[in-house]
Amino acid sequence: MEHHASYLAKWLTELFHLTRYQWEGFGILQEEGHSVHEYFSVLERYDHLLNASLAVLVTLIIATWVRTRMTKIPNPLQQVFEMVISGLDDMVKASIAHHAERYLPFVGTIALFVFFNNLFGITPGLSPATSNWNVTLGAALAVFCYYNFHGMKEKGFWSYWGHFAGPVAFLIPLMFPLEILGLLSRNLSHSLRLFGNIAGEHLVAGIFFGILPLFLPIPMLFLGLFFGLIQTFVFTVLSIIYLSGAVAHDH
Amino acid sequence: MKKFFTTALLFTVSVTLFGMEDAAPAVSKSLFEGQFLAHLSLAIAAVGCGLAQGKAVAAACEGIARNPQAAGEIRTTMIIGLALIEALVIYALVAAFAIK
Image (cartoon, rainbow over all chains, first blue to last red; front, side, top):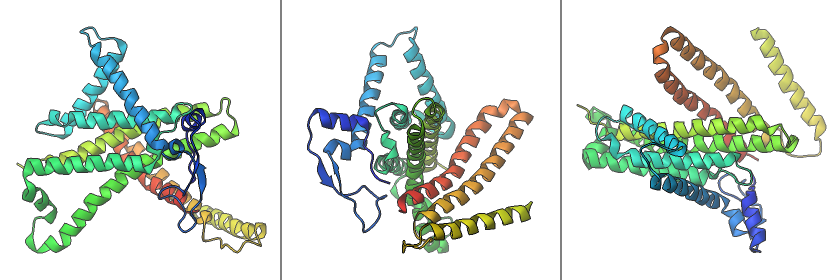
């Protein structure tokens, strides 16, 4: 899969007369042994970072705007945010028994980050940062570190890792490696699901644009909005499930 | 019905095999290395995913029809399940991207 920079990156490159360097091909999806050399500027090569930063910036601006204008009679945007936050709160409290409110900020941040990045897939001129595996793997690893840290904090180091050893002593050599492998491969499925969905959706939308750019892509754009929402939901729910599995006390 | 599907599958595969052989005689690349198998694997994965998701949604609809009050929870669980099923096809898609 060759790299297509977003129009924003191309436009900024032209605007600031950035030099295009010859970069080697892109990431894990490049064919092995046949490195393709293409000319990219820094912005075009690190397009996903540009778009992710932009998503963070947009989120911050909207959140700050809502936060500073918070009133008792909410304006429409505040209502939307209240709905989102209370929905996330319900989701966290439904799965985690103790101190659920402690985990809400992190889960909410991940959800908003993924959602705004997914929305960039249907914004003209931008490309979703989540259609790059590096970004989704970063998000998945952040979730991984977070729930392991809080699992160890809640239960203690030995108690937490002891859970992976299984109930019977003589099964430890069998159970422990398997459980650790399962724990690590969670990252892979967690990140690849989001990446594959968004990248595939973006690719199909691009092909539809290629066929007929006038009205044909409209259903794909609606589908992109829907999928973006669903994938955000799934990513968030899976993060909460992993988190609740890590911090749950058995009593 | 099974016989029909088997015949159709055999027909498609044979036509593709012989057709490809005619279309590209000079290329030394074999049919079974490269994108053909990646696309075929994606198609096979999509068949399984379609059947599984249909079954899941049918069961969820039945559950909601029998007990409409539980619609919210059933829907949430169904969406998570659908995403987990869909992930398998996504792996095939990623593999199809990765193979050139």
